Length: 250
Length: 257
Image 1 (cartoon, rainbow over the protein chains, first blue to last red):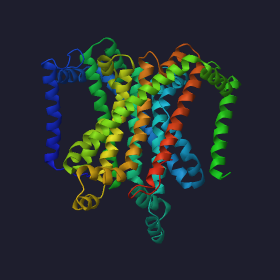
Image 2 (cartoon, rainbow over the protein chains, first blue to last red):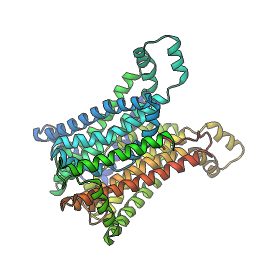
Image 3 (cartoon, helix red, strand yellow):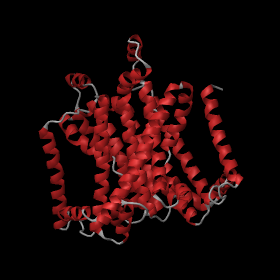
Image 4 (spheres, rainbow over the protein chains, first blue to last red):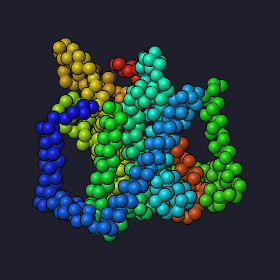
């Protein structure tokens, strides 16, 4: 992926999104799409802005943000740690990789009743569930990242007599970073699914709960506003991960 | 028996034993955390019951159609994106961000438009599967060496021939890897949607057990779902490994097989 983007591309992207929104607006206005199902973009934007200054609403945004951040922090630290250890011990790594990959392929999120039973209907249940859901890809990709570091680089480190710490900081980490961050992003995606889905289904916590309640009330404006904010939070997290990645790789 | 297998079996046996002991110890309420043996007994009863197969079929139907629709759309969108540098750079960030959104949040919209039956679950599964497959396909097509395409063109290959003889064999592995991720999220999406609003399906049945405090049966059902997911995943990993051997530029490895 090219990281540098020419300004016209940005503009084209903006135009594309705007065109889609205008087309949607038109389709609803001429009755092609039922107003009952889809909110006019021109009405949605003021609604989102109104909600964003509403304290009750902001609390919900904050809860979802906090749950995602806490789960992601856990998954990153523990995942990279375990991934590193599984790389250091080749024997354990080879043995555990298929087991972890198998778990990763399973719909772990269906275990949410267990988390409810252990932690009660609290944000902690959501964080625990999200963290366990998200830690698996981080482990897998971290191990793969370190395993994929070119032996030449390690020989260079050895020939330069680098200390273990310097070897890690200046050779291993930068070389492994791209793959580790792929894992972190995948983990983040899974955590977002876990957090929002559990909020939505169990109706506890933040925006997921809001979306569930407003959809039951058939309050379409608020429903779309809630969905828009979930989208915004996801985009924000992915963007932040990208920024951290750029900083580490430098 | 090799060492990996010993460690794997050892770990699995240890976890199951711990589960059994914890379940029997009375440290945690048995109603909440039944021992493994009880869950297995429930599993046997479940498989023997008639309505179980209905739920399996409903879920398989939703996941199958959702995955098929998601795949078809993803290939149709992803392949052209990969062939054009401009389109790729235009759409890639959009897909990248949209892909991370938890699709389950759109369930209310799917329910409004498609109803509470299987159709809304197919919608969620299709949308979930779409993004990983489209992104992987676009990336795989983009990484096909231009020299292959130019060589084929200079030999007079048609557009269709370029797709079937150059793009298909060189992207097959990467597209399958995308499908593996896509299938995973499609399963999660469909079953989650079932736990929310549904009339049938494995997710629906699991949450019904939960509501009736039939916890052992619930665990048994989830156990069954995990086994299905594991088998599907292992089969796809094998397929990727197998196709990689015949792929142009493939290295014969499947990630996390």
